[in-house]
Image 1 (cartoon, rainbow over the protein chains, first blue to last red):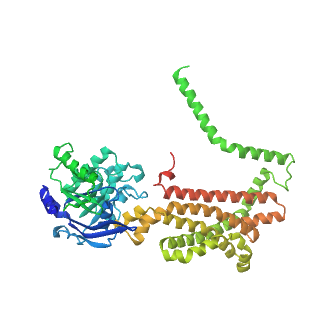
Image 2: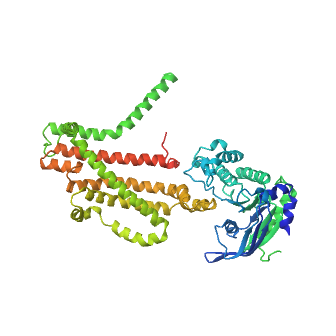
Image 3: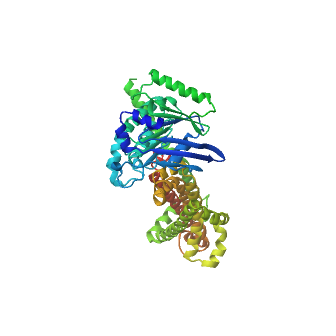
Length: 265
Length: 271
């Protein structure tokens, strides 16, 4: 199975397994407004793995993420999260799952630091400041979200997710509305933080190059099923110019545009 | 002309234009006052029709020196505010209830919308029958009038809270009171404050009518009483007092907006 192989490939495997949880999506079917979005969908993601999910608009990739965090309820099938490793379980064994949405969804009526601390006890303020510094926005702690740029707001949203030290981070096209330079910057930031913390990450994107530069594994969804499940065997840090990168991007893009109805096993 | 002279001339010009801009809104009211005073002094405007500004000021000073004026102002303000607190409070609570709970909306909203279309002042005959011309009559009328703007805007505000933020809040484990405190109430606040401003205006309108028809004290009573004795100057003082109190209430509401909505670029004070 590519799922288990891929995480073996990464150099920082020990760290990954320390924090991340596995995700098992089994025979999941979701119907939204009379339309079948996902049908008998199966994916196994191992602990600490970075999986990118690509596909055309409306293929159900966002719905998949939303169902993992419980914002959609599948009509059939099960979604199970693995156990948190014993060394990491603080008080509760329930894995911590956080989402980063396409829009930052900051509370406009709270300043930056209180936004990061949403749902946290006030005593954890120093920790929130530390994470804010990690995303490079320490000095904006007392500003209103309205005064930040789109990229900065997404970094605050990332800090808000990270301060909970998640076991699973869901990224729902979080960079979709950013300009090209900010995107690359944010991709590096997300990759660095993922590598140092070792949570499991699921990234939904329509940008194949973004998927390849970040993920251990790229999954293409088509017609509510897995159409392609490709391990990215390129050592990190990855450079977009490399031949292997380009070849893989070409192959996945070709597959997206071709729209063959046959499901590859 | 040297450059420095030119720039200082430009500054003077700029200062003059700022001054003109600040003075401009007052040109019409001040001219009107001058014409009014002149017409009264010249005998064109008889004082039993409209008193001169001078005599209005004089009677204002007399009334406030005797303490009579402040007694009436206190009584009226107390009535207005207690009616506002009762009506606005009930409106806020019911708005929260019907906007949050589906069954409460089904149960109550139709009734509230029907009652809303009755002008509160149309109830005056019934209210006098029920409460006499007691304090409770005025409290009831003001509360009723204030209730609807607050209710409707609270309902609307809560219903139009950003779904995305609610969803985000839920993924951060917020529910119940924390969800209200962090997301629902602040999200509805701009709309609720629109209701508050609207009802503050309505509060005075209803109180004036109620006091004019049936009262033994208050600004409305003072004005009506003055009519009996053809004291036109006292009548004008009463009318102007309503204008001032209404403006003060609006300033207060604006201040609240500025403070509570300071996160919103639309309400930030220009520097």
